[in-house]
Length: 319
Ligand SMILES: Cc1ncc(COP(=O)(O)O)c(C=O)c1O
Image (cartoon, rainbow, N blue to C red; front, side, top):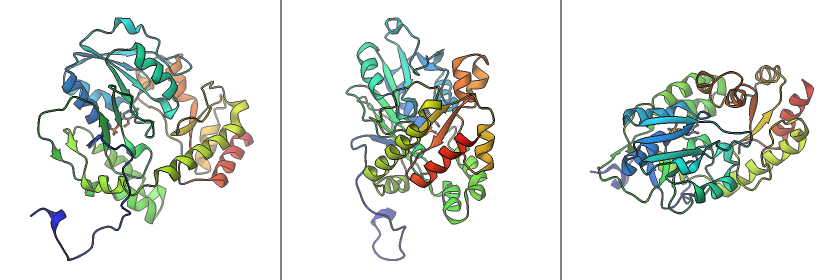
């Protein structure tokens, strides 16, 4: 008998039962598998992807034996590309970088055929009509896995259900012990998402996604981001549109001070590198290399508030 139908006996986790944010999306196991879904239903034979992205996107592309070609981006993080050259059997993937490219994507959707939007870094962005779009919510919330997909073509095979209970140790340890204590489990659990088949999102991840206060978490992100930008904008070499219309993932800060990253680590401020693989794919004088090597991506998420943002601002101004 289905576990969910049992009545009585021991309790499960106690979680608030709110609403999911991406109503109507196909709920899957990972972002990369959502891309695989798109590639399979659209039957693309080739895909254009940016050098500036995460190498796990190659997983489905190589699994399906599809050709891929890299493109470069400019300082606004927008493609250097002739969109007219895209053929009927080719997809074009664009990443909504750090949740800051909604406006550009609205324009891109008009001129680019076979567009695929990677919203792994922009959980809150709504999909545009008829544009294949996927999300990886664990980049925004404490979750073990999961993805949302908007695609009007359905895959006909029956998908197996994913189970997430074995991927919680880093989440539990970070809450129970410390960030340092859980770190190796984070690496391990993240690795375990590789080479999976396309699955339905686990019941556990679905339950966790209903327990999030999306309005509150979005507001906190926006406030933290605005606070940091206000403090640091005159030292920030990145000239993106920081107007705060979307809900950003991180605050990207480009400053040539080589000591800053180490200074932050010494003070237990951990910043992610987007993305280590890029340095292997491009020349060291390219923009993409510098975006990976020199830009610092400050956390601005719902765990933090003015106190932490002030500390970060002070650390930057101190070095
Ligand atoms: C920009 C981007 N797209 C897609 C993915 C893949 O998402 P997932 O890990 O859920 O497969 C990642 C990171 O993993 C990413 O950084």
